[in-house]
Figure (cartoon, rainbow, N blue to C red):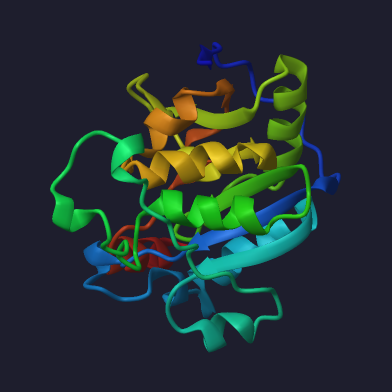
Amino acid sequence: MSLTASCPPPAAPSVTRQTDVTGVILAGGEGRRMGGLDKGLQPLHGQALARHCATRLAPQVAVLALNANRHLDQYAAWGWPVWPDARVQAASPASRPSAPESRSSEPPPRHDGPLAGLLTALSHAATPLVQVAACDTPLFPHDLVATLHRALHEAEADIALPCTRDADGRTWQHPTFALLRTALCPSLQAYLAAGDRQMMRWLASHRHVQVELPHDAFRNFNTLADLQAYADRT
């Protein structure tokens, strides 16, 4: 069931660790706009982007892990578990729309987008909730999890989704920073098995609440030029 709530005002800051949440840094992408580089390992002020994100998220959650598909030893050296993308079993022809027969037995590509990382997080987590964070967005709020956690329970939702407003008043949603109930794992497994990959479509199909947060906190670095320009200014 879809529920799109209006964005509530930002919650008061809190640094309370949420003991029912597993945090997962999504660093499993191909880094196409960085020329195929492993984005999570690119340095900012002498530290890898994914590690900036991990050290910011770790105090907010009970357990932290990293979702990565390359350079696993480098990620593991930071001391947190590393979870490569889960394999998605394709749906049988009888349970999905007709498609060319030759595709039914093909394994999915190793890089299957952020939903594959999300499925990995949901399938590994031993807590009722999962908080994901994109590895290229290291400035997210220190009270992100507490804020989303409160909104999710107040709205009796399955997903809490950050949204922001830019200087022109446009609203942006940030699905790679969603807080989700781990029980959604079978739904996502079925969605991916059917061949769907649009993250917002799947999130919006569940009861969710949008939470407005500061726009600048979700600045991401898509290219090396973006990263260098920010490093030069700070």
